[in-house]
Length: 303
Figure (cartoon, rainbow, N blue to C red):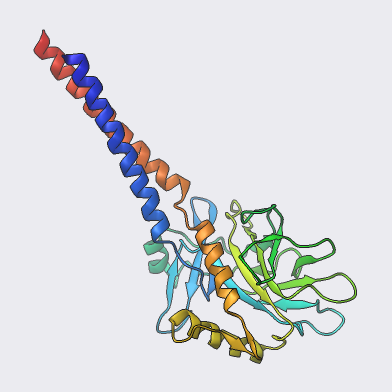
């Protein structure tokens, strides 16, 4: 009787554990931090560069989080740097932002983070990743048909300017830096219009590098200037808000870009493995303790 009770109880507990783990995973997927029109927030968590979003900096809706992983940006067909230095497409959004260790101590405490080291070089580097297809450092989708990202063709390059460190933190860890993103064909012509995704890791001197963030970048020859980008952003925001079913700019519907952003969001909208691991470990430990107590009680009764 004692053995059968113990076995049945274990089976029930394992079923409960599986259900709770599934619920934790489901909850993590159902409430992702969605892609942001914002800067990438950097902070120090346990000696590592933690990443999230810094939204509406200095505005009424200013907010900070360490959950967001997907960001949006537009590349300009006319470039940003002077002729001779500019590449086929360039942009400088999103930027990278860090809170001041003194002036923003309260915000950092709320995030469970510390400021970045002072006077530290900050740089970004590409990592290899996949969006369901072949892996690569730069993935591309034309915007036609079903969303399907594949590595860019040979000859298409993506770089950051300046190479190496693009900024240095202030004495108490503050940062507001914008590297220039450069997409180039490496010769005649230019890269095809469409959506490009990169997954850079951020390095801050004195800390371990960050996990990748995912930048969903639109490149189109129709978007040549900052004014063009602002007009297109208005159309995209109206689409996001549901006031229209299209995002028309210069006679072209750019709704496919939001479709691409949603695809990347869905791909990476999973709970952190460490979070699920902590849930499993805690539940497992509680079950083991209860099983031991029950077995000891049953054994004492039998004796």
